Length: 369
Image (cartoon, rainbow, N blue to C red; front, side):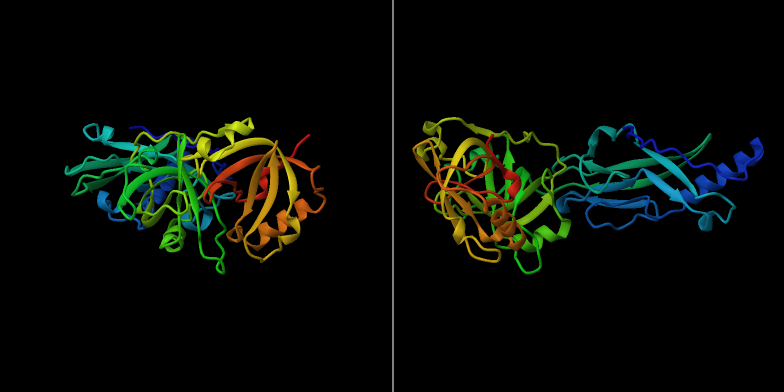
């Protein structure tokens, strides 16, 4: 498997004059890079594989983090140079096991690739990962021996769409989805909710050990995660209380979240929206009625009253959005006029015994033209 190499221009060495000198310098540079112990590390723990051997434990969700670009400075090379040099690295697995690996999207960053072993329950295998270090015309290969310890049990993943009506309350399940929204993560405000979605289905990850789990990997909107926990719906809102949370690099069929377009009053009813909670919706023409005076920065939950045609709509601002976002909403609503100000909404659908408009940020709200 050939990994895409980041094409970053190398910086010229100030003293190069002849081909033999160039060759000697190039060899010194690739040799120096080959000695860097953290070229390949555990993508979950960050532990470097300096001795060129490693064990990847599927039961723990291990992946590899492979460095694609290395900047070598003057001090490291002990050479007279200008600003150091940038060296590119590409990676290949041995032919026999190359199909067992995938390049995972997302973390850690643009200068690394995340290499994820595919799930093959109950089957261990060995791989050889080779890094080709390139500087100019000079290359050098270094290799790692990898033992992939497969999961000792069959992982059963319940699609989000199959949870409602098929899972008992307090039953422990595992599911996958893309993060579409979350409450703030400050030290004074424990994590209280994260929305994940798979296509046209969504569910909230709520409380429990979520605050601890979240900060281990600093998840972001757009991350595909796999989560296990207890199914615990609340007043009609589907919720999972997580016990484990990890980035998902197992390449199951998980569809990108699809917005729910609500274009008429008939589509904004409890009956029409049952099972849609947690999804991102688009609804235009909400008219502000009352309630903005109750909202304060650092205050409690507030429900702003709105109308969609003749239909009452609760615009729910959960205090877990945090003080700063509360203030943003206060500022946004400062000039709203009852029964006149009209907004368009592109954010999450909440639920408390019925549908609610439940934004995480002010980005979900725009004034209607």
